[in-house]
Structure formats: structure tokens, C-alpha cells
Amino acid sequence: METNTIHTNQAKSLLTQPKFEEEQMKGTLKTKAIRLMAAVAAGATLLSVAACGAQPGGGSAKATGANATVWSLTDSTWASVQQTFEDWNKANPDAQIKNESFANDSYKEKIRTAIGSGNAPTLVLSWGGSPVTDYWTNKNIIDLTSDLDSVVKEKVLDSVAAEGYRDDKLVAVPVGQVQPAILWTNKAVLKEAGISDAPQTWDELLDDVAKLKDAGKTPIALAGGSKWPYLMWAAYLIDRIGGPDVMQNILDGKKDAWSDPAVIEAMTKIQDLVDAGAFGDSYQSMSADDKKDTALLANGQAGFDLMGSWVYADFGTINADFAKNDLGYAAFPAVEGGKGDPSMLTGNLANYWSVAASAGKESQQTAIKYLKENTYSDGIVDGLLSSGGVPPVKGIEDKVKSADDGTGFLTYVYDSVKNASNYQLSLDVALPADQGQALLNNLEQVFLKQITPQQFADAMNKTL
Image (tube, rainbow, N blue to C red):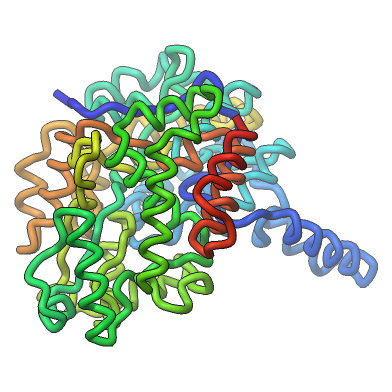
């Protein structure tokens, strides 16, 4: 039985960008519009590319007849899911599923445009939260309860399954791995700096930062150029200091909720880290999609990296020797005197499939049949575990243990999710779109020390 809970505001949430969201798109979209007009004037070349959906935000993914379309991600842990598309197509020649894969940021831009124009793929991928609420409210996706409710409840951990329901109807089916944010360590780098283990408290983390800096290392790798990695620091600190009620008040839109002392203290502690040189001098220019922060840790240039569990497989790709011998992981440190339970997690609960309302009936039925057969099929479960992902599936403790490669990481993640006192959905997904974007922008200014903690709170209160 699951004990963790999710603090979201589903009833009030509107569309926001998935995952820990990227920077504002206004300038990007303006540039694309100018380029598109130039291409139209010059000829039809760009139009032919856009028609096949190759350009983010362009073209249509609508299928014909019983065929279905899907956009998935390029992350290595998606291999087992993508294999099911190939297996399906071999077994169903008259009802094919066409898959295209994209990096996170490209997908985010592409799906926003496709949903708004009625050209979404048959299977719509999300991270739960506000996007699913908005899709459902605006009738962009269909009710899957009669077809898939029993399948989901039988297979998926309760906390992860619950995020797929709106108005007591199943509208999003979990897929992929649980993705809590973890404090990763390079044990060799820590040892070189005279640090024996990961910090258990905030004061210990500050001490470690000083030691790593003295050793000539970047204490904490941070892909600030993507903005969304800032959210993990904010979510953990707010919870560790004030407990889950602080964030719940924010999600509920309570007046001046961002002025809670726990928020002010959390922003102050972030700036204390910046002042201590914790993130080095170039964190604001590093991109998570480029995995530069992950590489800093794997290649022995940094001691810590606060990042989602999804990068576990990437460590082995970047530096197999490091992944085998020196990779460490730990919970986010406790804050002395704080009200939060150190077992609390933040991150993504899983990914979710919805079925587009704009798809034809036959295409929808193909997607539904696919989901019946492939909602955490053995192939997906085994494939995720073999690639370092932990599926949110009931009763797989023995499989998880068997799949561990000696590090114990998979069991650690599975048990952490099961035992978490609170599993906070990524803030930019849990919050409505305007609030999520404002949070990204204001947090960036906190990390760059362009605003004070109080100015941050004042700015965020205006979004409630």
C-alpha cells in the first residue's frame, strides 16, 4: 500500500509547460514566424518539412484510419516503450503506430502548438499536473475510464495512478519511470576533498561546498541555463523548512502564500550557496539537454548534482567507470529546526499517455488497445529496469532487487517513492502556466542575485 501523497491543485490548474519548464517562448516563436514567412516567399521547401512534423511546433500529427501517431522522448529509458511500438506494428499491419522522438525542450514547444491547433498525435504525452487538467477542461483528450481504469488500478502504484484522474475519470495513463530529484555525488571527488559521505544536513552541505571549492572543484553542478533545475532547490528547501503545508497553500492560491517565512528562508539559503561559490561561475549558461551538469559530475569536475533520477543511465554513457565505481546518491539534506520530513520527495511522478479528442475514432481505438496491452507490460518493466529506470508498478520488489547492478540504486528509488511522506509534483507542472513561468523567471533572478528573497515573494504573490 502506498503512503506517499501528491500536493497539487488540480481543480484550479491551467495549462503549463511539462516537466521542470524551459524559458519563455515568445521570442522563439516570433523568430520562427519570420523564418516561416521568408520560406513561404522563397518556395515550398519548409512547408514540406513542416507537413511531416519534423520542425518543432509545425505540421500535423493526425493519423488516418486505424493508424495512430505518437511523439515520445529521446531519453535512453524510453527504449523499451519505443520497442513496444515496433512490436505492435509487426503484429498489427492494418493499425500502425507511427512514432517520432524528440528531446524534451523540442517536444514541449511542439506539443503546445499541436494541441492548440487540433493537430496533436493520437497519444499525447505529458508529465501530469496542469497540462492534463487543461487538456481535459478544454476537451482535448478523452475519457479512458471504461477501457483502462481496472488496468491502471491493478498495475500502478496508487500515488502515481491518482495523478491521471480528473473529475473521478481516468484521462491519463502512467508510462515510464518514477523520477524523484536526487542529490548525486562523485565519491572520488568528495574523498579527494576530505569528505567521507553525502551531507545529511544543510550545515554539512555548506561545509562540503567550502572543502570542494578549496580542492579546486565546482561544488555543485547546476544547469541554470535551462531554468527548471532551480525548481528542485526551491521545492526541497521550502518543504524541509516549512513542511508540505507551505507549498499546499501556494497551490491552493492562498493570499500572500509566497510570503511564508519558509519561502523567504529558502530563497536566502539559495543565495547563501551562490555567495559561497557553490555553483561555480558558468552555471547560468549550462543546459540540461546538453547534459553538461551531468558530465561535470561524471568526469570528476564537480562533487554534487541535484537532478532527477532519469540521469542515472546517462552517467554510464558519459563515464562507465565513474558509474560503476564512484557514483553516489542521497536524499536532499535536512534543515536544522525545519518542519519537513526528510523522506519527502519532489520531481516527476511518471509520464502519462492521454488520447487526443481530435484523433479519429478508429485511431483512438488503436491507441486504447495499445494501452491495454502495454500499460507496464513485462517488456516495459524489464526494459526500464535494465536501463536504470524504476517503473511505478505494484509488487515488483523482487524484480527491482534482481535488476540492481550492485549500486542498490534501483531499490533505493523504489523504496523512496513507496515510503515518501509527501511526493511533490514538479512545481512548474503543478502550478498554472502563468504562475509556473513567473516562478522560473523569478527563481532565475534569485540565483543570479538580481532580486532579494522578499522581492521574490512579493513578485510571486502577484501571480496568486
